[in-house]
Image 1: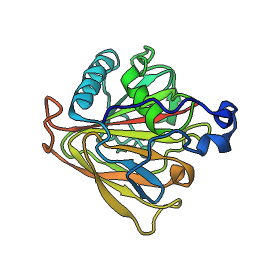
Image 2 (image 1 turned 180 degrees about the horizontal axis):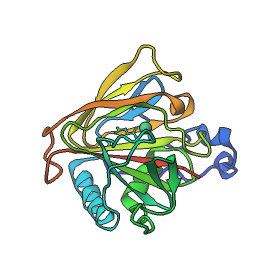
Image 3 (image 1 turned 180 degrees about the vertical axis):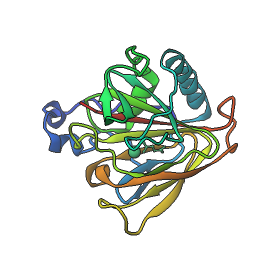
Image 4 (image 1 turned 90 degrees about the vertical axis):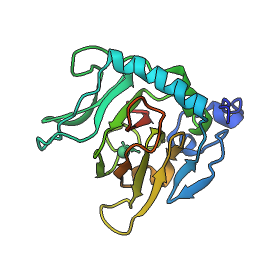
Length: 229
Ligand code: SIN
Ligand code: FE2
């Protein structure tokens, strides 16, 4: 489908300064499925839009190369990362945090307009993200169960965009452990993690390497758009 901008702000949306209003997805596209509060827009992005996004991301990665972050425990992550926006997510011995500079010492490139258009279509909030975290999963890469909790205000949703190979995504609970539910995220799928689900544990068990031809080489890109500061 073609992306449409969120509806023009109505009276209620005009004072969307406070956190509770920000949670309400007014004007947002209606998700096809809702799994434990994770709102899924299956196949929201068509092949041409996906290809255009990948082109935009090539520009970002040329300026801000992918790197392998170290966990605070000194283990390299299997996912390679970089960011766009005024803040990027980094991890090293000092811990997880948002930082204004890439580890190479340069500012992160701006978030591509096409990426922001997806946020406008699904997030339901007027404020724009200040970080687009770009995760690249090569063969064998995975991401353990975690919460996204380095942001200043959890009232803002996180929007995830999947490109390339399929990924087995696992959704848990607000506390570590307990029963989980898994689903496959495919290229073009968009997911909104907001409201009560904003702090739910989640992770990627594995990707199905080589299931998509979108990228020149196999693998998966996941973008997560965040209001970090
Ligand atoms: C993440 O939780 O940061 C990434 C999720 C994904 O790769 O789908
Ligand atoms: Fe996450």
